Image (cartoon, rainbow over all chains, first blue to last red; front, side, top):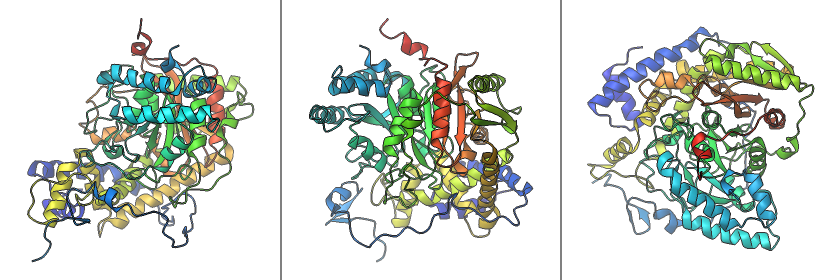
Length: 95
Length: 490
């Protein structure tokens, strides 16, 4: 499968990655090779096969809506690249 | 007394008997790491002070009779994708180069409760994406059997640390072979448990439907002992399964009489190194002589597992790794124009090439217009692979074969051709897709003296069968240490 520049740009938007021109060239080749390789799956007739996300049949696991963890804000914020007044700080998002 | 040449359970017994102190055992590890890890680079973080203070606490509890288990006082290393409160957890990535978790993963917590001492965090492929430990941001780990070769991956640091006798045992994680393949390359033993057996709470996710934590150690006894401790139901992991058959050490018996072992003919094809083929057949002969029934059969679907795996794992990775955005933790770029640009630049600068490759592929196969053709197709193939195993387990207790088509490759040999590297996982990946338990243990050495691994796969939740067979096989062999390790202190 040929991957166009537009596809790479589009996937870059979905993946939130900014690739350099060199990386884009490589990504085009890598993705195209990989998609050619995985097209092997088309040899299999899966018309009547149900897609399997989990191998064992899990039911939804519920619990009572009770808070079990304590307030850990100060510790959590220690990992933040930037913080202000007990909140995460991000660049301005609107004027 | 050479503490580092002992197994984990031997150290545990000697600590219990008062022949070794916990601090003494921990200091032996720290000294070994200090001396030898410059050469191998198994560790990203060594928690010297934390380990010594843990050791002092644990010694008191042992003396008071509060801790009596087999791992009380035993040092252990943890793959760097499992959170440990207060200790850097980097996933061998630049993007988490400053991440200090505020909580501890469930598996690590269970070890701590059992009195094990956490020595440090081991090197891995970045976000567990790779089969060589070369994609780590913190440099490659080298194989203790031959430092010009890879230790395998992605739990390469854990496997190499055990082989190099820097630590007696370690935890790894296995998404497509990441415990079994490095165990095989480094001549140690590793178990990938049934999906759901060990809680994934606190394990930084790669492919959530495939990831499973498991032990790496010098022998089957150690692995079974560790697995018994970390396998407990955890309500914080919604895929954790509540089982009562976690008494794995009860399966450590030298008896395979009547055990039915199937060798998949489609594993022993042209792509497999003839020396590995020979070693696996020899192992089958040994088990036959011990009373097992060994037959060859056609498993089927083998060549479809890798393509299905890379679609599913990349799709899950692209979704799981969305959380790394430079806001709440981890790396943030220095200069940016707005929020969106900050996300993009932080991620692009923070992730390495292999991680970006998989995020791109995963984003593509999940995108509108391609979702059915790739992602849903792969999930259907996964169902067919599971069916192939179900059919095999109607006839056999264990499916046995090689772990990898080659022994450890030279450093730098795999990175240039991603698909070639992916093909190295051909025998391990289907086991994850089907959610089954697998063990890897040494069964020989190739012409270069590099270890060859034997893989045994069991039906879901039948770890005890593979532990029993692996233990019985192990009784016929002596544990072999790398030459470089044997020569120490001479």
